[in-house]
Length: 93
Image: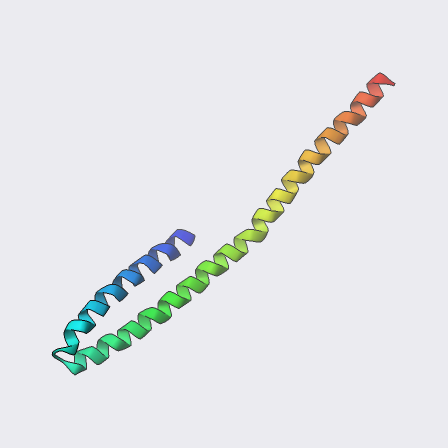
């Protein structure tokens, strides 16, 4: 999902750059085409902002999962030495 969003953002940015170049050319000739391109630019920018928001949500949602895994891993590491200490004290006592 994350890679798809990043790919879509790249494609949208490429299209925005191409359209900006076309707008510069259209300004010299046809106003009607210019208006269409400007509307398309607005639409693409809205799409880009939406994709960026999705990307941010994906990152935010992945953070708690990572923290939970890290905490569980830390807890597991902490518990192992404690149980070994108990086993040693029993065998030496």
